[in-house]
Length: 174
Image 1 (cartoon, rainbow, N blue to C red):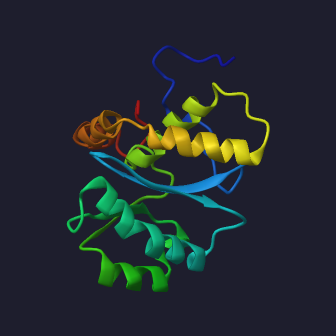
Image 2 (spheres, rainbow, N blue to C red):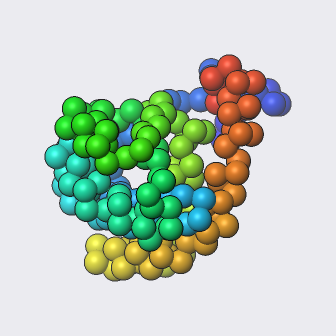
């Protein structure tokens, strides 16, 4: 329980900043567009720039084709050091029409963070007892992800940007 004045919940002094890392039981890579989701890739161990580059090579074009957005897709990613590694930036220069970068830990600006939350809520309804079962459920629920969920997240971007401006870069209701 937290005690604070009414309407002060999103003030910086009432928030705890977090640092994201590879915690949890299964790290995944995935992508989305306004029409739906692309491939879901399971990551074992710690991901470095070489693993990230391999994932892009194996999955990005294939996912864009699956979503029906090839050849005009844009790669939208945050400023994670792996994403900014020279070999990854060089590869993207030759294989993506445009790369859009956002600040790290900015779920307000990166709709896929909301998809991860949506996926997490979906799999919580199952009693999962093994990593293989977790992977099966993640894949199953990912493949069932409705296009309208993705479309609504993408349509919300202008409103998100306006709220970020209104909050002067601070926390928003998203």
